[in-house]
Each structure stands twice: as structure tokens, then as C-alpha cells.
Image (cartoon, rainbow, N blue to C red; front, side, top):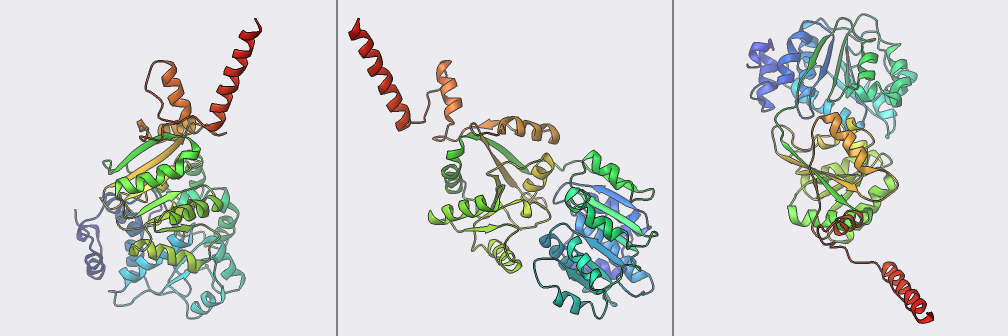
Length: 418
């Protein structure tokens, strides 16, 4: 199948060639015909499957084919600034070859609202925004949504979740009832699918299975205190040029990044409390190669596209199986090979092993457990010794040695007394 057979205009076919697309991906081949026909759509496809182009191409063609109207005629909502920026960039690149080029506006939080309001004074054809900043623009009377013909929810499961529920309801209340609605995501929990059904009218449903495995998944058993030296060892041994390391909090992100930098690694940090300029700069540095290891919270888990990202490391496990899917989907994109390594801590308050088993069940794939030489967890190694298994490679701590010496002294004193 080719893009020409899917009904794209010659101008958009030129745009496709300029982007280096040789043939439509599975989700693009399945999504373009119903979108061009005006149908609502619910599309579930793996990360890196080409979902953005799957709605961007027919969106632009529908704008070109229809007579102009005031205000944005298409609205694309994204949960993160980075995803909104990448989507707007692709739409602008695809529109560059069109005779009547649609104006694509972009709005997200973390920066002043005034320049974004100024940019809307001449109107726009496509509005790409995060929900909170879109509401800011509406409150400032910067635009109206009464003319929206097409609504796209990118990473729809996140937008339909609790974190964005109130904002999304407020946005939907200002949209016309008669519109085309498209929902795209890599994961759709059943509860979210049920909620999505309330906003769609007789939708076409696309559910694509994962492509042949291109991400090698590994699970390393170790103790919590071993994670940082084990990470340094992996970075030295594997020769990765670009690595994304996921942690659970801003504090841990900065701590791990600082420790890596102190050991000579070109490390950077990305979390939601950074300014927009700092977030942009560190991502540019990673793509340019001046940063080798980016330590990030889940702000980087969705929509972020980095060419030739060699590996993802789950320094701390994500909260849900869906987040795991989105995290590891940052590597192995567009047919490339990638690696995903998860640290399974044998100690600590949380039960990491049972949590990772849940992740395995949800993705329908078993990941063999491994131990990195020199970083064997004490609990596992001690159990193996007791059953005649492998010898522990972990040295006894000073406290353990003192306890054993005290026990021997106490035993000696008892014998002398008899």
C-alpha cells in the first residue's frame, strides 16, 4: 500500500516524500480512510507506530478541501508541552508544501501567556495546546472554539484520566456538538475506553498488536543501594550514546544526575519543575549528543521522540503498566533497535518484584531476571548460599562483622563459665 492509494492530494504526497515517509505504517493505513470520510476514531497502536502523522495528514487535507471559516477548525490536545511542540512542528512541516498553508498555533504552560495571545490575533486554522493553557487563552478571550470541526486527543488515555478530567470537561463544553473526534494512544485501560465512548459517535475502532519485538527488555535484581554504581557500570559496559533514565521524583532526578556528572558522565535532568527554556535546552543537548544520559521523571514518558535513543533505564519502576509501556516506548522507534532495563530491588519497603510481575502480566510478556556481576542482591545471594547455591559476591558490612564478633565473644564466655 502507498500513501497515494489512501486518497491524499498531490500536495500532501509531496509533503510525505519531503518527510522521508516511504510507505504508510499500519496505523496510518488503517486510520486515514475513515478520518478522511469524517468518521470518529478510537486508535490504539504501539509507541513509535506513526500515530501523529496518522491524524496530521488527513487533518490537513480536510482543512484544504473545506471552505475557510473563522477561528480554529481543528483542535489537537496533548498532555505535555513536549508532545504539543512536536505535534505542532510536524503539522507545520507537512503544511509547508501546501498552496494555501493552514496556520498552526501552539500553546502550552510554563511560559508567559501574552506572546501566545499575540500570536492568535490573526486567527489560526489549527490549535495545538495543553488543556490548562488552552483554558487560559479562552479566559482571556484569545480565541473561540465554536468553529472547531475536528478534535484530536493525543495520548487520550492520559487526557481522559483523573489528572486532566476537570480541564477536559471545561474544554469540551465550549466545543460544538457536531464535530469529528479522534482519540489516539498506545494504551487504553478498560475504564478509559468506557469513558471515551461517551464522546464518540459510532467510532471506527483500530487496535493494532505490538510490532515484532524491537526493544530488548531486561530486569536486573539488585539492592537499592547498588542502583547508582550498577547504572554507572551499565553505561560503561554497554556503550550507549543516548540513554533516558526514569525516576519517580524531581529530587531523585537531580540526585542521580549530579552523581553521574561527578563520575564523568555527560548527564542532564528533566522534570516538571524546570522552566520551559531549561526543558528545551536539555532535550536539544541530548539530541545533539552533548548530553549522554538524561535522568527524567514521567514528564518524558509520553510523546517524546528522540532519534537513536539507545536505551531506557527504569531506575525506579513506574506506577502502572501503562506508564511502563510509554516509558520503554521512547526507544526502539521507527523500526530501530532499543534496550529497556528495569531495576528490581530486592530490599526496600515496596515489593518491586510483585509490582513488576503485574507489569509483565499486563503486557503479556515475561522478562527473565538477571543479576549484574558484582551487584548481586544480599537477600537473594544469602538464600542461594543456604541452599547450597551460588556463593555470595557481596562483602559483609562492618555492622555484620561486629555482630558476628560479639556473638562469638558471648559464646566463648558462656563456655568458660561451665
